Amino acid sequence: MEQTSIAALSTPPGRGGLAVIRISGPQAESVLRSLFIPVKRDVTGFDERKMMFGKLIHQGKLLDECMAVLFRAPRSYTREDVAEIHVHASEQVINSVLHAVFSLGAIPAAPGEFTRRAFENGRLDLSQAEAVMQLIAASGQQAADAALRQLQGGALRFVQAAQAQLISLMAGVTAAIDYPEEIDEAEAVGNIAPQLRALAGELERQGSLQTARILEEGLQVVICGKPNVGKSSLLNALLHEERAIVTDIPGTTRDAVTGSTQIGGIRVNLKDTAGIRQSGETVEQLGIKRALDAVKSADLRLFVLDRSCLPDVEDEQVLHAITGLPSVLVINKSDLPDHPGFAHWINSHRDRLPENTIHLSASTGEGLDSLRQAIHAQAGQPEHSALTLARHIRLASQAAGSLRNAAQAMEEGLPLDICAVDLNDALASLGRITGDNSSEELLDEVFAAFCVGK
Image: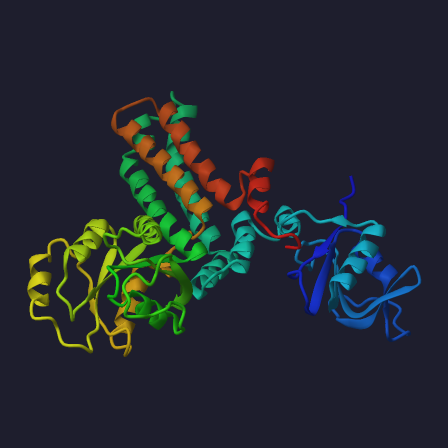
């Protein structure tokens, strides 16, 4: 059955200078020839990979003046014939051109269908296909760098190396099972259990679900403390803008104030919460409840104390809320004199306070760079990870679990058939990362997250 031709807008909808309409499939060139007339009338053919200027005309009506380019298979993104039409980004123009393209035989592309065809035609493996969407959605420089590493085959190389090592370890097991009378089991298998455990450990070390989520969504950081310790000033200082209202009146912040910034290439989502204290006012109580909920769900908490005041029972309440959770102690207002009892309070509570302590002044900016470094450290080191997508990390973890089960079975002297099942499960999990073992359901799941036009 001949492959259909698909078409879609490949740039974000909305007003702008240009919009790109992409067509892929056997009819791409014929659709382009039917609509596009180059300005140079002596052009008899459409040169491949050459941008041309001309007019789009359908049923005698001028749709737009535009640029167009043709990529013939297999030298295209999908390894099919691909035509791109660069029109003015008017909603009316875009809709008119798409209507004309569909009337000439192309059908609307499903989400991610261009990239799915690139995968199915061998242009990309599945991990590289996912990297395309990861790059489009990158919220920070490190997320973009991770996507580019994966697009260039970083995950593929790591997984293929793990597969090769596993297949080598499985060879003796398979031989002993297939030829039990000719091959001695102990000699063929040897002591491979430690090697299986070592491979399992490497699979788990090369990816963290938390790091993957941080790359995708950003690091969630909550600024917490009692009223008037400088939380809103700290938020404004980190964002380099006046996002939160700053006053001397306690309880000014009733609901969370949020903002995002980049720290060391990582997107950091900051949340300034209501001051945590006992309050009889209904609205403030709601704000305090939301603040406590935010404290529990954050990746990192900045516990702010005012060094010019003696900490009290309200500070104790905040300390109780963050105990045992990843936090940084921020001692604010370093531009003011210490309260005489402040150092003693810190020393007497040192066993409950966060180990990481930053002294700063939100008003002067002193110490902010140290705080940024502490925040960035919480994100981990994604640039050192081979696996940075949650799906890949979960599959690698499944493979690691199967490898450990196989190693344990060998150590307990169980039949090799049982070990072989776990080893094959591990190999299958790795294959689902790169698409070696891809089902329609898996592909539908992966590409459903893509935008239309990519």
